Amino acid sequence: FDEDRNFEALAAFAKANLGPRCGYVHPDLCNHDQKTLLDGFMAMPLADLKAGIDEKEEIMKKMTDQFYDFVDGTQEKYAELTKLADDNQQQSEEHAEQLQDALTKMQDEIDSREEQLNRNKNLIKEGALGLMKSV
Image (tube, rainbow, N blue to C red; front, side, top):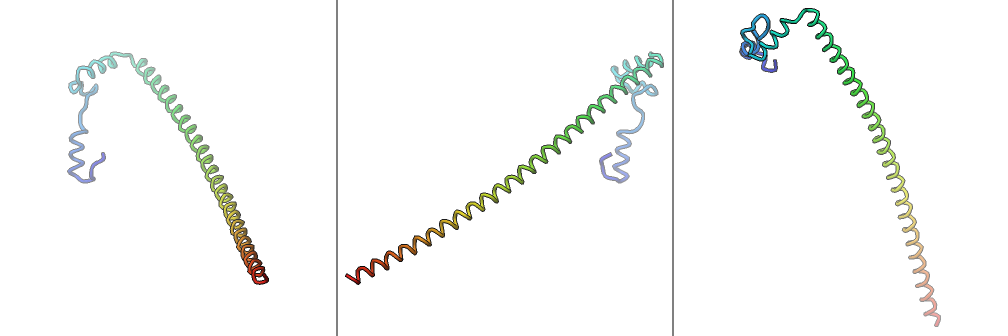
């Protein structure tokens, strides 16, 4: 029952879904296919009915076991792939840090060499000015 929890909704649900249904108590409510199936079951010996039920329950148990085995395997694979993704993310972050550190060091080296170049240019200018004055 997925409707509102009020009397009107519950009454409508009960009227539509509850009450006599097709079955051995009310065979008159069965359609032709249901009546044929019901007659076949009613004609079967009780031992055969029980054996058929046991067989279907065993099939259901096997299918349930297979389903849970599949779910367990899927969960294990999910955990494995999640760990792999986390490890890759961590490695990527570490590599990004290493690259950033290397870029920072390279920029520092470039800045240092530019400063040295500028000092050398200034020394050359001063030297050239000194030569020009002495001439």
